[in-house]
Image (cartoon, rainbow, N blue to C red; front, side):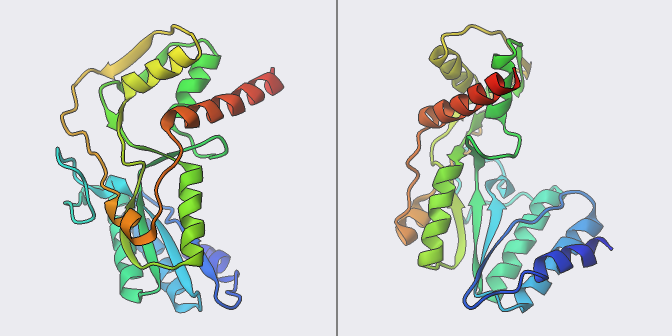
Length: 239
């Protein structure tokens, strides 16, 4: 039922002329669900989509002290990564699309729960900021920069597997302090782990920049300002 329902949802959208499908795999749990998702993608491939943009993830890489490029070692220790990598293989074999290994997306109108959103909500509620590891280094990519790349690919199609990220990493503790300084606030930070992360996992985006000419434009500071304005509006509206 799960498989047939999802296939019906996707395939009910018939391609019109030279149409593009932006596809995001959904399951990261049971092995059976992974197989279902892969079967869905195979069914979709058979339809007359002219081009498929698959939203994969930079989380598929093993932690490494070196810059992570498209040839870096893959971590297949969890179902989420297995689903992403196998989906990439299906897209690559079909020669009908591109797979984007995306870093941590954030933005004012990005609905998925993110670390930055959690931090700002705690700040608005004057709560202690609780995080897993303040010493972790993360690459954040603004949703608008991703949108720009997708629009570029719709006009000028490319094929293969590419990293898509800001190309810069920031320490979580540093990020929180930047937000607090920006808002002129002092709030305690609780971290369940204080282990120093030697694997900074900086993501190499030189290939996508070379092939498409795309590059991220929104700095983390500017992006935080946009999210803050949105959250301030929502906070006042709810209050």
